[in-house]
Image (cartoon, rainbow, N blue to C red; front, top):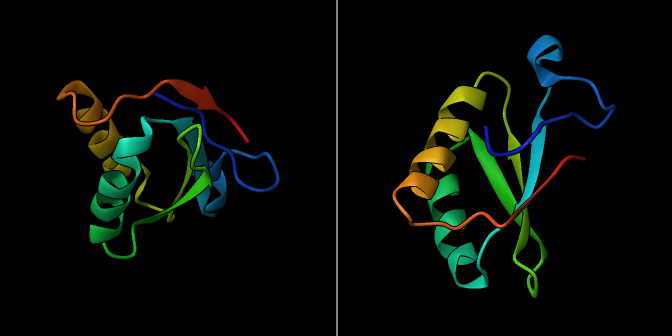
Length: 90
């Protein structure tokens, strides 16, 4: 896994059924593309830019969609489409 997840209470979303959030940094040039891809999976996740200068982003994942979104992120990383530089937990 490329980043850790917690809900707003610091509890694993796997047992709560709540939205989980993941933070990490990518290249600035990749922010728009990744947001477009994430949001194309309608209702599964949304993405926001925390710091556009450093490429820090946050992805909010809907309950039950964790595996698909993590798989998508890992696939994009493995294919060299995005370059994850820094992982952060909330």
